[in-house]
Image (cartoon, rainbow, N blue to C red):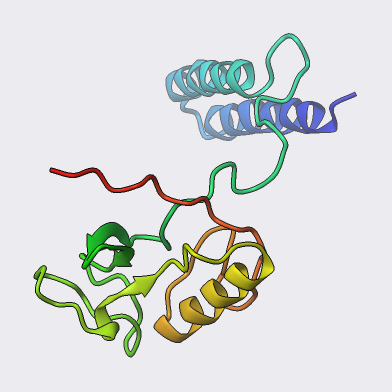
Length: 162
């Protein structure tokens, strides 16, 4: 039995009848009628969307995040001097972290987030977490800003020659 469904039905009944009763007791019968049918339609619409007839949950359960990105949150993958790195093109990092990258000639360490593609496993995860902490960026599934989650991000595809 889905208790969330029954809680939704109970809350909907209270909301529909309570709001209609309030306006009806104030002598606003037309407003009460319009409100009753409007809220009833809205509750039915969302009830059918959130609780399908099959009884299954519409929100899939599983590992989070479903996909780990190549780069930390809001950083962009670039190939600089033959190495794939992540750069902050929008200024998403906190003050004192990785500097905003705006020019391909900016190859100083303060602009680059290295992916340590030559290592793997726990060693790579540890290096990435330490770098994310030092550069003050978060990475869903790897580093949440306080704790190293311990998921190894995928290797980005090899750069293509243009």
